[in-house]
Length: 371
Image 1 (cartoon, rainbow, N blue to C red):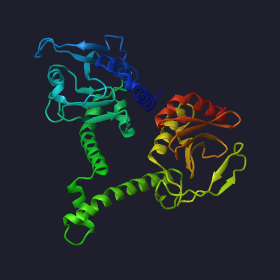
Image 2: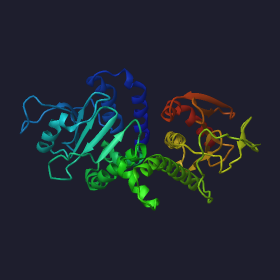
Image 3: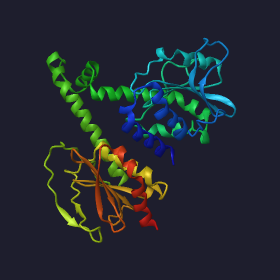
Image 4: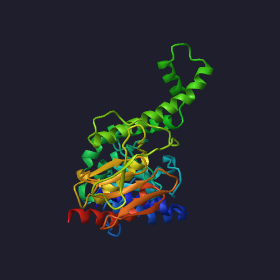
C-alpha cells in the first residue's frame, strides 16, 4: 500500500477504537506500534530496527527511558515517546526526549498520543531539540500535503537529509496553517479589526467591530467553499467560473435525465452551478476512493462528478463506469457501491474514513472495468 493508504487505514482504526483505550500501554499497543510498523515500515519485533524502552548511558538520568528508538543503517535515527490517547502533548512532560536527543545520533524525535504525532528536529541549535515541531500529523484530520514528507522517514524510503532540508519550511508553514485554521474557527479581535479596517472607511468602533465579528467568519467560510469548488471544477476540466456556495438548507430542485447506457435506474442531475455544492467531506471521500483504487488503476483515470444529491466517482470520467457514489447531503451518510451488473447498494457510514472498510468492493468494481 502507498503511504497515503497506510495512514488513512490507521486513522480509521484510531477513530473506531480510541474510545475503548484507557491506558498509555494500550495506546502503544493499539496505535503507536502499528504506526511504527505499518506506516513507517519498521519491524517492531526486530530489536535491530525497533528498540523498546531505549536507554542511553551518557548524560541521561538513571532509570529514564524512551519508549521506542528506530534504527536505520545501524544507528538510532528516530526517537518516539508515547502518551495516553487523548492526552495533551506538552514537551515539559517529555523532558527525556530533549536529553536523549543530545546524546544519540537521532535527528528526529516524535511525541505522540497515538492520534496526534509531533515531529521535532534541531533547526534552531545543533544537537538540541527544537521546542516546536516541524511536522504535525493529526489522524483525526489528515493533512495529505504532509504525507510525502512522512514517506521520507519510512524504512524503505529513508531520506533524512531531504527531511531536514525541508523541515524549516514545513515548520513555519504548518504553524501558519494552524494559526489560520484557529482564526477561521474563532476569529480573534486583531483578525476582525484587520479586515474591518480594510473594508470599512470610517473609524472601527466597538459597535462596528461587533458587527464584523459575525461578518468575518461568514466571509471566510464562503471563501473557502468557493476555493474548494473552484479546484474541483479545474480538476474536471471545466473552464467556467467556480461553483458558488449556497446554504446547506437551501431547497434542492432537480432536473434529471436518463443517461444513455448508465446503470439501471441511474439518472444524472442537472449540473446547475447555482445549486451544486461540493463539501469538504466529499473532497475527502473522493481522495480516499482514489487512494484505495490507485493500486489497480492509474489515479489520473479516477474522476469526480458532483451533482445536487450525490458526489460521483467515475472511471475515465465515464458515467457508464461508476466506482462509487458519496451520498453525503444528509445527516446519515451513505457510500454507494456497485456490483458487476452496475446495481447500486448504499452502505451507511459515519465519516469519509469509513470508506476504507469497503476497499475490497471498490477494487473489485474497478477490476471489472479494466479486466
